[in-house]
Structures are given as C-alpha cells and as structure tokens.
Length: 450
Image (cartoon, rainbow, N blue to C red):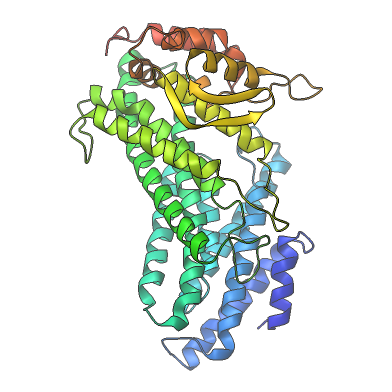
C-alpha cells in the first residue's frame, strides 16, 4: 500500500498538474484498493482499522482528482476526430472506467466519499458522447451510493467530518447530474434539424411528442437536485465557510455557489420554455393545479437561484472575487432567454455585467442590448463574445412553438422567430441554419396553433 505522505503528494500533485495522469497512476490506485480489500478479508470489521482511515480518505481524493483530470482531456464530441485523437480519447475514457470500478470496489466506501467522483466523471463522458441513457444510469447509481453512505453514518460527533465530506461531494455530484439534464435537452433541441429534419412529418412529430416529456422530467429532477445542492452549500457556508484551496479536508471553494446555480438556472429556464408544449400534449403539472401556476413558481425559483450566482464571493485578502468572463456571459444568456419568454420580467436588483451593460428590467430594449452585447467581437479573430445558448440555436419545432406560446404580449420580442431571423449570428451551430429551421417549422402540420 502507498504510504500516507506519498498519497498526499500524489493528490496535491495531480491537482496542481505536477504529476502525470496515466495508466501507471491508475494501476497504482487499483493496487492500493486491492490491498484494502485484502485487509477487509483478513479482519472483517464494520469500520476500517484506525491506520487505514486516512489512507482511505486520501485514496478517495486521489481517485476524484485523477478522474477529473482525465475527464478534461475527453473532447465534447468524438465524431469527426482524427483516428489518433479518437484513440487517445477512448484511452482516457477507459482509464476513467477503471477508476469508477476501483471506486465501486473500495471497502468501507463511506470513508472515501470523493471516490464517487470517478463514477460521476464516467457519467459525464457518456453525456459528452451523447449516450444519455448510459449517463443517467450512472447518475442514479452514484446518487444511490451517496445516500447509502450517508445513511450508514449516525449522529456521533466523530462522524461529523465524514458527513461534511459527503455533503461537499454531493455538490459535485448534483452539478454533474443537473448538467447532464441540461445537455440532453440542449443537444436535442439544438440539433433537432440535423437529427430529424429529413424524417417525414409523422415520424418527426412522434419523436418530438416522445422527447418533450422525457426532457421535462429529467430537467425537473435536475432542477430539484440543484436546489438541494444549493441548500446544502448554504448550510456548509454558514457552518464552516468556503475555502481558498482544495485540500484533503475541504472541497468547496469560495465561489462554490456559482456553478451549481448556473446549472440549476439552465434547468429552470428550459423547463419554463417547455411548459406550453407539455400542456399541449395533455400532461398534468406535478404538484400544481395549472401550468401557469407551475410557470409562476419556476420564475420565482429562477430569481432565487440567480441570487446565488451573482452573490459576492470574498477572497482570502477580503476583496471580492471577480465574476469570470464565462460567468458574465452565462448570466447575459440567461437573462436574454428570460426576456424572450416573458412579457417583462424584472430582476430583484440591478445587475452590472460590465461598464457597457446593466440589467434590471428585462424588456424588449434589454433583449436588444443583450443581443448586441453577445454579438460583439471578443478578440482579433472576429468571433462574437458568445452565442445565445439554446434559445438562439433551437431547431426543434415543438420548442420554438412553446417559446412563442410563453409570450402573450405584443412586444417586439414576442415574435421569437423574428428575433431569431435578426440574430442568426447568435446560433452556436452556425448562422446559416435559420433558412432550414424555418423550412422545418413551415411543415409543422399544426401551423403553429397551440
């Protein structure tokens, strides 16, 4: 078994990219896990021997960091890669699979909760490569294991550290699960033209009728998991605070609210956008009397979640952590999406994105200002600052009609298709698709009547 000091060095070295993540490191982890299992066979006990507790905890951290580094190497799309790049991606995915197997094999796994990160990483590989069913099975597995580990701990103060470990890793698990729900919906809605544009009308409509409730259910689950994660993050923040650097003792950084809030906001906006489509299919809003009641609740939940995203985060020196460019762009994308959905939503407080854009009342003027902001060149290559995410790239007729049905006023952005026509530059899949998207919409047998 690897000595404690060496395990610590491996964990911090992988995190700081000082130690290569390769087959040799994964084999070393597998060897240690096998040694822990041998100890369990020799002396079966409910809790690990005292001398193994720290080793298990560090091994869980090493599995977490190693799988995360490998995940970053896996491209978002495997189709279209060169043969060499494809083999490299598949090799990294195989190493993640081996780490997930090691995580499942750990004895006394509640003492190494970060090891669940390997199963999460494998789920995200499946999601990246559009195997959404496989991803969801893995998310369900890791959620069940986490709940089992948490239930195995009692109210003994000696377990408080393990409870904190489990709560902190849950934020990462929730982030991944909600992210898969959003990616599934966004890829389905955005790439509908490429996947179903060539099908006959009856087939395309049948598939759309099947996909809408499936996406809505997954988004609902993802949004609920995200809300739970933010509640836990808030409790951790109140009781322990967040930290400047990830260590063996703490996992949540000072900006720990932001990524879970981003994923939850994405899920809530997509759910809201699909509500008219769900109503048209004759579905009932779970937990609410009417679809408008649910939509009102989703708007309120969005505002509550956005507050976490824009919440100031203090750094170690007491100054505020700046909002990353990616986060600022995401906030504008969210607010533009909301402006296109509602007659006139107002943020709880004015939000300064930069010295050129402040958001408060999300009306038609704000929608135009946000569209211009996203369309501005971001560098010397002439590329725009950002696309408009799913609302600027949708090619699924059910989604487009549903967004249109969310608006019942006569404002300029009430004509969602007109906005798309004016801002094709904000389509993440290319500005030349709109003509083909319009052709797909024109053949909708309902003629846009909802």
